[in-house]
Image (cartoon, rainbow, N blue to C red; front, top):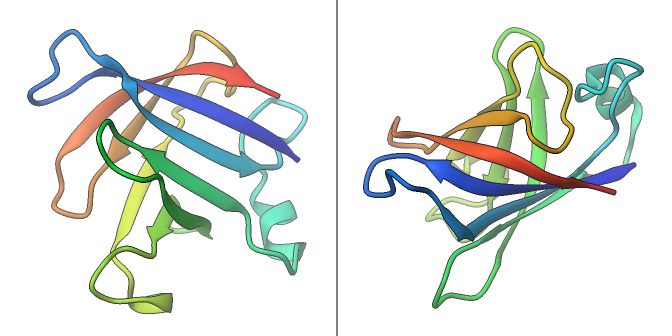
Length: 121
């Protein structure tokens, strides 16, 4: 289990990115350095995630995986809780999750942002 730290690299309203907009995602990486769907399915404990934005308390959530749809995070500040909470998708692409690589984060409304992996530990 590792914690991957993501910092906003670019997106609508943030053409230069923002290191103050971050995600902390706890998950298991496979031998190739990518999130491990089998480990997620076999783990009875939720994999935790946090969204951090300036001027607000961190928002807690958990990591979800659907083989047909990929990875997402449910944040519990949303109007709906539990399985009905809106999901924020994240796509690591073909590369491993290591510092310097990029992840696309898609908000529930469909807006996509690029985040840079700034730490894995």
